[in-house]
Structures are given as structure tokens and as C-alpha cells.
Image 1 (cartoon, helix red, strand yellow):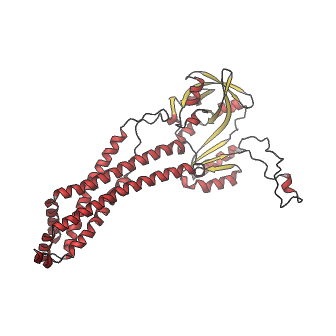
Image 2 (image 1 turned 135 degrees about the vertical axis):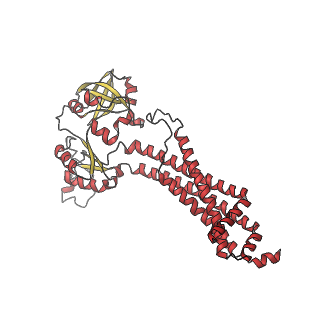
Amino acid sequence: MKLKLITNVSKSLLLARWKQTLIAAIGVTFSITMFITLLSFMTGLNDLLDGLILNRTPHIRLYKEIQPSAQQPIDLSKTYKGHYNFIRSIKPKNERLEIANSGAILSALKKDERVQGIAPKITAQVFYTVGVIDLTGIINGIDVEAENKLFFFNDYVTEGNFIDLKNIPNSIILGKGAAEKMLANIGDVIQVATTKGERLQLKVVGYFQSGLQDIDKVQSYCSIATTQKLLGESNSYITDIQVKLKNILDAPALTSEYKQLFGTDAIDIQTANSQFETGSSIRTLISYAVGITLLIVAGFGIYNILNMMIYEKMDSIAILKATGFSGSDVNRIFITIALSIGLFGGAVGLLFGFGLSSLIDQVPFNTAALPTIKTYPINYNPKFYIIGGLFSVITTYFAGFFPSRKASKIDPVIIIRGK
């Protein structure tokens, strides 16, 4: 009965100053709407930018790198021990970039339960022959099906069919920028030369566009078999092994483990993309900071409105206390008013935020750099709506708590005597 009475009194006070109540609710609604929209858009943009890099980057890359000799003769001489030695006479060995015993390594990785999948790869420096001009390029020899499964290769093939690399011998998917330089259309035959002078004619079966122009101007894709044929190597020739893990956070530890176990060079995705991840984290942090600031500003607005309401309702508060309402009852009344504003404004704000996000999601976003993206990116993560709803309730609770505590301490005798 007491709870019902407090609810009725709170309702009466809300409706008595309905314009002020509406303004407070609109403030909360606007804050929640912008909070949801801002976070959905910014994190959607982050996911898009992350995808350009992370979707095409293995969690662990095993490879072999040509390095200078670690031990120089002058460093081994006792005569010059402790001296500053700058003579470097032993140059890097004439070694192949092939990963030794790649078959055994691939077999071991397939049996590792921590590994989601693997994709062997060959990286070959080549020249695209265009008339009398040779353009520098890179051909990636890939296992077509594994590359598509792990790194969404098909999403970046803007024209043609990615599976043609496997089904059509001596075929190539050109980077969009490289194709434009060579004026190469799908179905044309181009000539490619390696750094050792081997030449091979390849049929263009598609275009690849990653969204990174510098990459698309030089990079193209062939099947592993075609690349081995181009280089004049055996079927076991592999220069890279791309590993995708079930848990990306295990990458740094497993990189060290695989490096020692297989005797290859290795790099994890966190190290390879540390600067990019830092930028993404900062953008997300800024989005949360701006959104929370909006909610806090709305909370101050509710605080001011409730303060004014208490000042104008001194007579009503005095009468309530004179008729038996305790200070805690008055406290509950004004907290109920604040929470009502927060719940109503927050609920409407969540709906408006979802609606505005959906509207932005339909806005055309056409750019040559990102041909697979047709509209602005939006992230509909339920976490944003939960955070927004909770924060609206918490903010309005504290906005009502301090004025309600002031109202609970009012002495009705002083108010009535003053009247």
C-alpha cells in the first residue's frame, strides 16, 4: 500500500510539471540515441578497417628470411675482442627462401588442436611484361580453397571467379591497380618473368582489390602449382605457411613455440599490426568517451530540473511530511521521479538509436578503394544497448539522489510558518 501511494504521488508530481519532465526525458533520449548511433558507427568503421588488414593477415606466419651472418671473423678474433668492430666481410649466403621440410610442418600443424586452419603460400617477385616495359610485381601462389576459407579471398575478388585459379591452368587474378596499368582485361594473356629470367604466359581470370592501393598495384594471385611452374621449382616448394588459430590471443606464445620447434622465422599478428591495433583502440576509446559525456550532461540536466521541482514543490513536500510521510518516503518519491525519467527516456533513446543506426546503414557508400562495401558500416552489438540502458538508469538515479536527499531534510514547520 505504501509503495503504491509513493508511486501515485510521484506520478502526480511528474504530471504536474509535465513540460519539465518532458524536457528531461528528451535530454536522456537524445543522449542515449547519440550514444548508440556513435558507437555503432565508429565500431562498424573500426571493424571495416580492421577487416582490411586482419582478414588478410594470418595469426602466425612461418617463413624463411635471408639474414647476414651472425658471426663475423673479426668478432671471433681474440685480438680485437672488446673493440668496436665495423668490418663486415661475410655477406648473406646464397640460400633459397624455401621452408625446409614443409610437408612435415604442415602435417604437424594440422594435428595441433589450437590451430583452426593453415594455408601454404609462395611469394614470388616478378616482372609484368607490358610491351617493352617490365613492371615490378609480386605473385602470391596460394591454396585457393584454404585461402578463401581462412582469409575470405572471394570477398576481395571484384570480377571473375576465385575458383578459376584452381580449375584453369596457368591462370592469374591481377590486382586491380596492376590490371589498370597493363590495360589487361579478363580473358587476356599476359607475360610474367621472374628475377631469374624464367617467363610464363598467364591468362587473366579475375581482378583482386583489397582496398589498399599500394598493394593492388603490384600484387596478384596464382595457384601454388602455377607459381611453382613459373619459378621452376618442385611440388614441395613453399615459402610461407599461414596459420589461423582458434584463439588469436595465443598467437605471441605459439609464435615462439613454433619458431623453436620448426626452425623457421615466425611473426604473430599482434607484432605485425601493432600500430594498426593501437589506432583502432584509440578510436573506440574516443567513441565511448564522447557517448558517456553526452549521458553525464543529460544527468546534470535532470539534476537541475529536479532541483527546481523541489524548490517549487516546497509546500507539497511540507504537507506530505506533516501528514505522516517520513524523510525516506520523500527521498523515494523523488528518486522514483528520476528513475521514471531515466527509464522512459532511455527506452525511447535505445529505439531511436537503433532506428538512426539502421538509417545510416542504408546510406550508399561507394568508393573505388572499397568495392565490396555498398553502405556505411554499422555494428549492431547488443553490448552497446545494454551499456546505454544501464548508464541511463545509473545517471538519472544519481541525478535524483542528491535533490531527493535535500527534499527529505526539509522541516515542514519552517515551510508552513514561512507561508
